Image (cartoon, rainbow, N blue to C red; front, top):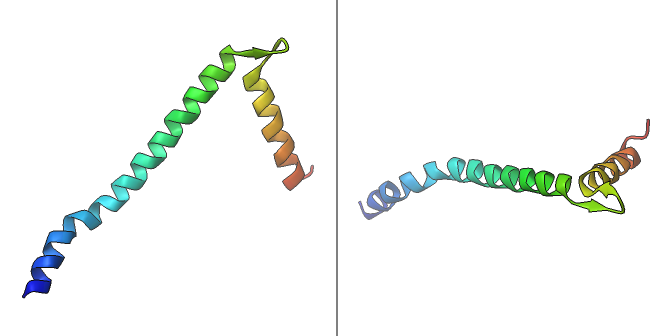
Length: 67
C-alpha cells in the first residue's frame, strides 16, 4: 500500500523527463543562435569571427570525412 502511494507520487515526475530534455535542447539552440549573432557582428583581423568559426568547423569535418 505504501509503495503504491510512493509510485503514484512519482508518476508525474517521470512524465516531465521528456519535457526537460526538450528544454535543454531549446536552451542549447538559443545559445547557438546568440553565438552566431554575436559572431557575425565581431571582426578579427578584418574578417567576421563567425566566418572564422565556420571555417574551423568545416576543417574539422574535413578531417573526419575527407572529400
